[in-house]
Image 1 (cartoon, rainbow, N blue to C red):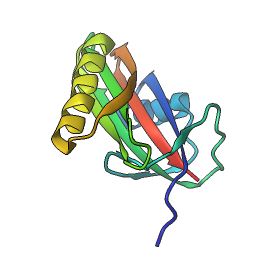
Image 2: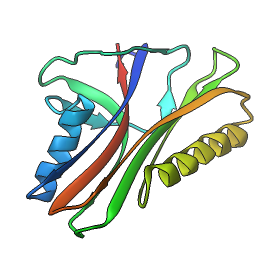
Image 3: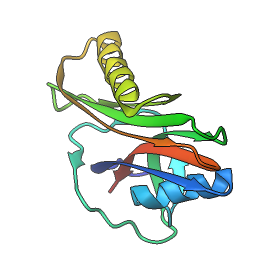
Image 4: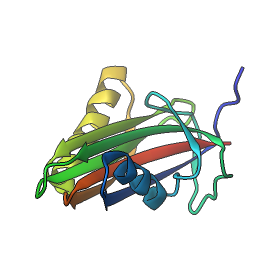
Amino acid sequence: MLPIPTKYFISFGSCNADHPLNAFDGALLSAGVGNTNLVRVSSILPPSAVEVKNLVLPYGALVPIAYASKVSTNKGERIAAAAGIGIPEDPSLPGLIMEYSCSGSKEEAEKTVLEMVEEGFAMRGFKLLEKKAVTTDIVVDKAACAFACVVLWY
């Protein structure tokens, strides 16, 4: 069995580049996860996980992550990504992570992702103590990526 993460951090990044994959890679670098191997997970924050700041991930680490990304090559288009978290009142219960991306502004993405957090808590019958989100947006030049994430760590 894999260990249950005890820490998390929430981050975002965006990048314009010549090619879509390079834009995605640049957004990962901007978010602080670009030199790792991302293992995409579904949207559950382990009970009592603690938020940390400035966590330096080892090069090449397998990193559990929930993320939203939007890549576009439509010059002039604004794209956005958001990651939201909800913390339950009862610390023995899991929290939620929600991810959302769109053609539009970071304000639109934030509004939607926080609504998703609230709906997820309502669906579970959990009482919400706190919710927060990180967002980014970018206007496409050649190729662009907006990326927002919650990294789970040990």
